[in-house]
Length: 381
Image (cartoon, rainbow, N blue to C red; front, side, top):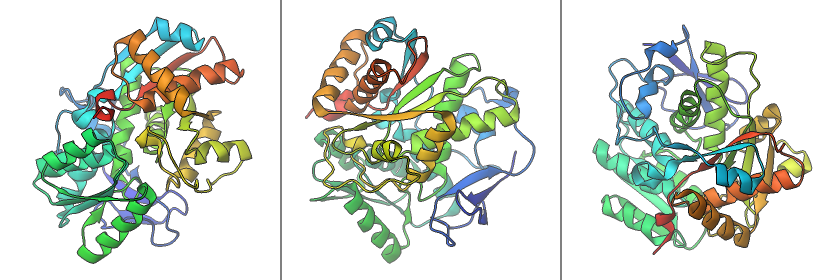
């Protein structure tokens, strides 16, 4: 088994893997898990059919058993009709809506709950725009752990129903996820519950590394020219980029092959990362009065802004936003041309791909992967 440590993503402050830390005590930035030892072999992948197939590349401790509901190994489908719509040579949809609790959040919360259970924390708390709360509720139930979830009252009802079905403690508020985040921090201080909000612990990003590990394997251990990812908190983008860099270092990928352009898709009603890219900034200013019906994109002040913007810059990527009408139109087109029950976040990503081609910022001869990060059923009452 390989060994891992933790290091602050900004100042490098080190901690042991089992340290009971959230953000860096020196500078307040997120920790990342760092391999401390020999690189794992691609031949060591496990013969199991969930994201824990990639356990050799993930920071499990010796003898640690994952808390798993069968997350990951989601379909990657070649979509010629959507490629024609967007205006690129080839386009795949990676459909995360078929995960447990119907979104990519299952990956990160499976990893976070696994590590939290191993450390024996008294309980878990998370702020959510919807899908992260549903995922935490399910994995906490599977682990036999207590959980408190703070969610806006505007969270889609089907998602709130999933949370309630798991028997965890749900608190809905008249506000947005930033307000829920502040309440989660206070609740963690009062109770000792561990806060598993996006990037407030390092293991959700590790679970989301499997988005990239899996994509590379499905494409025959190569990567596309561009990845378009609907982005709220940014953990998917951060996790994938970390996976791509590690795979190159470990020899899992051709070190000379170009890395994909990482393209962030946001909603026009909440686009702090798009605005930061346009301004050439390395941090994002929180968005005032955020609104979009694509609730996963309604994150006004992402904690991972610095890491997402760094990834965009390093990859030669981009960021753009879609209006509510554009999101609705392209969500419908995605579903009708592919047979995938797309979430509005996926529709936003598809529109952004088409917009960037139209603006000359994404080459028509590109091979592109668009992530549909959740299920459309989660948005229908």
